[in-house]
Length: 346
Ligand SMILES: *Cc1c(COP(=O)(O)O)cnc(C)c1O
Image (cartoon, rainbow, N blue to C red; front, side, top):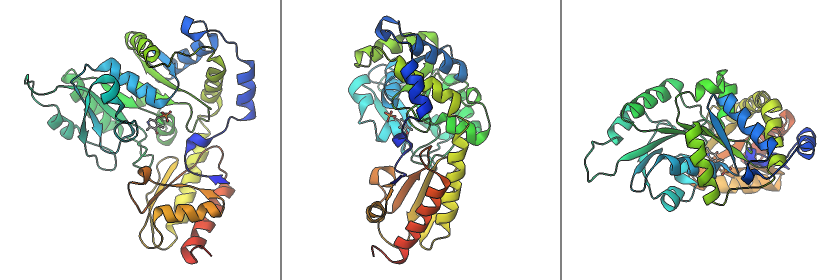
């Protein structure tokens, strides 16, 4: 099977498994897991923050950040197609008692002017904005890199109004590789950043929440409250340390494969392909089967992919390249899609 559904399907490589087997471990709830501590220090160092916290998932990392930055009754500014707003089960309302204030971006990106309108005047009967969230790279926008200049304008505006800004950086290292800018520059000024080890970096489990020492101390309490206090996490942290050493630069291969895939697909009749900036290829089927239909047929041919944005666009398909996908897989996928468009289902 050629599995293009997500970069979460990556399996630990032999080198990563060996590092996991060797890991020194202890009880992390007692603060005694040396490998986890080393991972947290390494993450903080790479991102240029004071501290970092290992968390079981990206969703938990984002939600801990929201809980730390806000008070119940506040609003959190999110982009309409963001992960936090669409695929985290309304958790900000469940756990933090806050409501989203939704801004419609242009392909995932809203402007400082839009934010200025959302930061309403300080009237006692309006719920104040307690946090702004950005997403880099933007998943539903096809792995788009959030333009740094706009992010900086947003940071400046939010901070001038005393509002913190969280970055959902699930794929921030894809942004580093795509822009050539060190990750610490891409995240400078944010009040917290979450990034995933379990996406393109290829780890089985885990994300990191990075921020000030004070924020991370509080985040550790919230993680425990959510049931995310784990014990001998060193084996998972060892995979993370391995990935931060060996799996960042290789993301460039995934980006090259995504471009190759997009170029191949854009030659096919009836497809409108979004030019990929990183490892996510989205295309619309203007003529031909629906997205679920095409995905079902490709599954029969040995290619797994899914309708984009959780199926909310019936003619949009998403394919994600990752360390389990070779150039040959991409070439074969283009051939198979071409075959399905030419002679459906035969
Ligand atoms: C995957 C993802 C998350 C959440 O990570 P999980 O580990 O699946 O909970 C958050 N934000 C974005 C943009 C993602 O792609």
